[in-house]
Length: 236
Image (cartoon, rainbow, N blue to C red; front, side):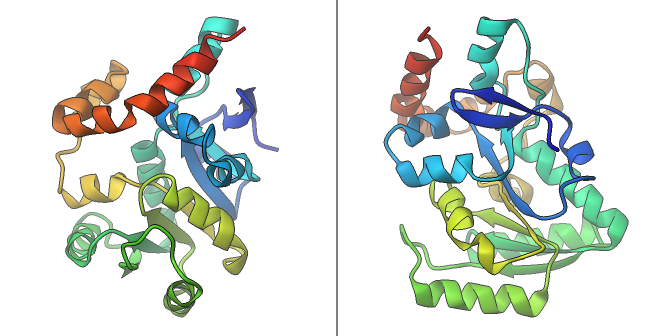
């Protein structure tokens, strides 16, 4: 059984992801942040996705801030980039197969090149789905055919929040025995579209600040949702 903390109605993994994977062989791996929490207050489909059975980890430490203020205890830090690289190490040891679903063709080509250089032990498949708010049944059938033909152990989904989490929740039954991990912006960092943050940012728990310096538009876009989280964090 997974070691989780129930905070604001969401069950968040409270142990190292790689250790949790020894007992978790298939299902969804999603992340939660102040921004995605704020979206759940307005988007029931995302709320269902983040509450579904599977692994839910912190995307940054700040979703767990309110839990610390209330209890004096922390939630284990598992962040999107960290679990992505941990999963790659798992698949490297197994000579596994992974599939990148999302992003542009050029980004996926760059990912393929980097994977061949850094993880030659892993076989890689990719597909860039249509860029629209909701994929059609026909779109999902093409995706299903591509993934089933490649037969990966892990499907990395990078369609941005909340589209990627909702897609995983609605389509996971079509991929039994596989890990579906929604990692969003990790695709761009891994491909080098944006510089990866220096490890010091993560150690100081200031990755959010590093991201804002890289892409200040993110703060403007996400601030209304973050404020909804702060409102609920301060309640009770």
